[in-house]
Length: 281
Picture 1 (tube, rainbow, N blue to C red):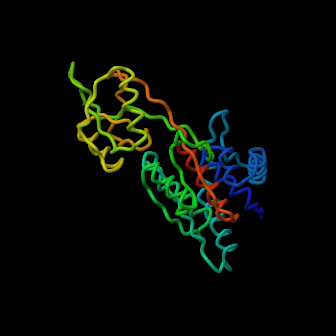
Picture 2 (cartoon, helix red, strand yellow):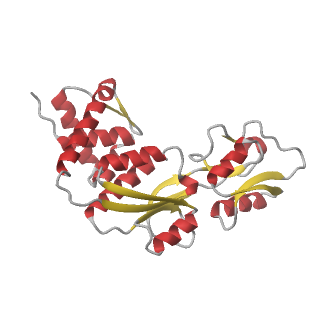
Picture 3 (cartoon, rainbow, N blue to C red):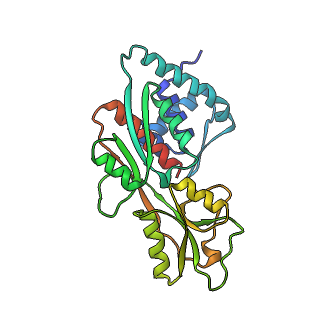
């Protein structure tokens, strides 16, 4: 009977979920080479190729797909056993900018829960500015937000691309100002969009001011307007119409993790969150 190295199995599960040895290493607070070696030894012990490696992507092989459910169960059972004598839960309060919370949020929460089932997660979704103000005031353990021009601290997780999102059948008549859906001021994404249009000499008019990205998405799906949105938060029935409408390219924005927890458990959970967030960029 073969004995499996639980740490190697955990490395495999993370690499499979995050599609990257680098992201798995970040979540485990180790090196990419160490993760690669653990998984190689696991594959050698099983006599199976679990992952297909390419220069830019890691993906499951057919045998890896078959092994993954059992691997998850093993890791979960190990974590349950290790935490059997825990006397208290750890609460971690995180704020995330609404401009970058898309359909991948359930996967992020699932990954954090899998890494530490005893963790109590407090989640706040708001504008980047509000999230950072709450973090600076000590109300949050961590924040994930778009980079603000006034600050250079934090850990960059990824570059977030933005596009001019709208319903596929949205049209702009010749000579008509571009119909925009925006967030209320102050909003850095609103300012970015308006600045790009003004620099390009494109007239615009606000026809919808949303109370959050979800409401802006609804206006786009209804065909009311165009909006500058990160592609991960845009409704699935919208597309980037920038080229078709002759609109200026929008810059990408850095997504930054700000954190100040002092205990190892919270730091480990945030490494997992950061790696999972970057993997879903």
